[in-house]
Image (cartoon, rainbow, N blue to C red; front, side, top):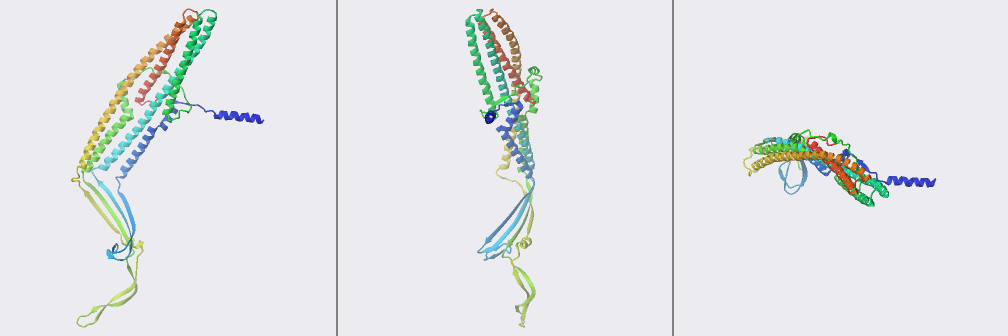
Length: 472
């Protein structure tokens, strides 16, 4: 019983210790790449920065409010802030203040700054979409490269199997004296060549998988396989739109075009905002303050009084007195002093720019140049898009023609190889003719696979520029 448990533990440990190779679908590859791509993450932070800038420009249109408070000890000859009288005593004082100002008008500078930041945020969001699109297109390119190499690897394995089967038949024919022993040796050499081709195709497949892992930020040691797509190329062998039609759609679908147009609009808002500095600035402001001092004295009468001589009557010499109430002096509390010493002010401020070293006008001129440069950039991006679409369309047309030609070639090579194999088995043709027919078929099959995935990729590029889903 203990031996059984021990064996089970070994089997279980071995099973769990084996790395499970994950088979990725194209959708999983795209989602993972977008979630981990650094350019996409950077674009997300740019969006966040744009949101902060927009919020700040909105808040800039509201009044500001600032509060201040301090406590200090003065000694020596100083001024009592509550009595404004010089004193030699130590003075402990405190004050509180609050101020607010509101910009009422400045040539709509703040308004256009808000519009500029709003437009820039839209442009940054388009940049984020472009970053995601670039990742998607790159992943699809690498994915199709892996699929293509997997199919080439399968074709190479099938060729090895076919050569092995033919080698078995040829050995039997050689044993029977129907073919020379040299044909067996030639087939053995051909088998070695085919096996080398399998190794080469396996290396190409591993390299394409490595490139895909790197695009996904995965370590090279990670195990990966991809799910083969269900591609019916028969439904894809047509281009229903012209290059001009695709370009017109692309100008509305491509985020880089939208971003350029938005930045062109934003540059216009920036120009108008800069012109606001040429106009008068009108604002209102208000202030509140209060103060406390331990040197402030306040008298509290006790209800009685005393007569205090103040002089004599001229002529009679009679004493003149004044009744003075008696009581005590005390320092009012901080709350009472803050309440009693309150001060308020409100003002209207008008600032008219007359001359400031051409700073405002220079800013307007620079903004005008930036506006014109944004217009040029938008035109450049449209021209680049047109050229890219035209090139992609021509590549797709060429890939379609190549696919149609290689498809016919494979059918012909396959039939030729079938007939040559039959004749070779009957001894009607020599090994050289058989080898040529086999190599021609393998090359045609490889060319067909290459043409197939080349056309699929070119067709997907055109779909991309039309804003269509990039799936299978």
